[in-house]
Image (cartoon, rainbow, N blue to C red; front, side):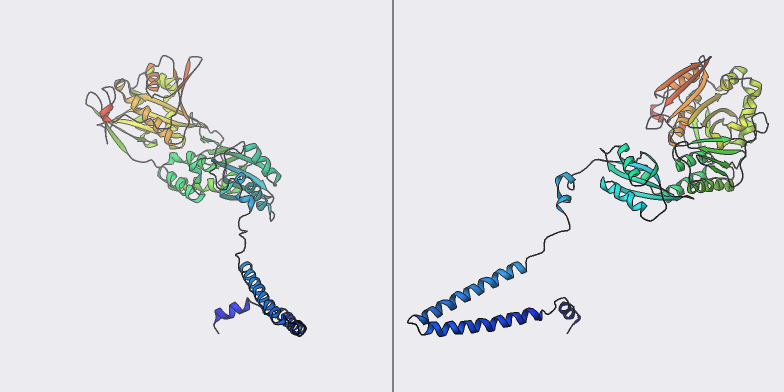
Length: 465
């Protein structure tokens, strides 16, 4: 006997009680039939009645056998999908428009709390795409990336989560970029930070979501201590995070709507430690441009190593040019350069001639949630399209960094800066306060880059990479 046969026999138990009852019924039927045969057999039509009874009995037995086999071998009903699941109201076979949500809520650290949240989400046909847990001293913060029906309001979802045991629930719309898993995203941010020191504030903002980041130097522009510092291990205070800046001072991260978790604090501190170990670094890339009169200039990234060249350019600039750029006493202009050339506070582009002389600087400065652009071109090199070229590249860098807008602080009679901002072909907002003009450009989806060579006019330099 094979194993298969043994398995089949094990699944088919022998019902001996039923067989005994059937055997007793058979003997009883035989006895009854014999009595009837003896009674009818002595009648004149007895043999015919016995034959007719036998035929009827055989026909009845055959019909009973056919009926029993047909119904006993019928396939079992399909119970895998209930009538409720197949109903049109449940929308099982209909395409439903969905949206992405990022949601964070705090729950008790006890068995079953996460299951309650999942049941509440499943009740509204919400799909959980990713889930992160942030352990706390008391409780756990669960962060979800959800795909929900577009018709489900955020307020209703928040109420359902509260009913399931979630507290301090925060929710906002997400996009396709949030579909990247957290380890992959953190590795990408670390790579960007390793290549460029100016990426650290941007990496922290992308890692922690909507937050405000301020880099406060240890020394003021005048050289006096600012008193801003933080311990090596950093400080976490609810919605404020303070990290020691490797270049001196402190990096303050604020997020008023949601407290930071120890997990987020550890990730942010790891990025800062990576930046400190790698030291000052700026990508070395150069673009050679040809001006309308035929002179060649080079556009590249600048840092504190260009401090001496930048001060020499200040010495060659007129007081009018310095006043338009720094809006204050021109004798203090050199004090700003160390701050402006630091990659911690933004990105700087420098323009130098074929002989290596620095003739223009363009700054993209991180100002909390906002971004400032500033230009200065040496007097003898103005009106040649250098300022417009720098501004277009700075705006492209701002778009790449995910900024929503950039602003320039100038004066109403600075026609060169006003014309350069208008040449961006972006929506502009103007605000004048006590003679100071603030122009804000709302950035479009596509970056503002220099025009291709075949589309440039005589007012724009030609690019040769």
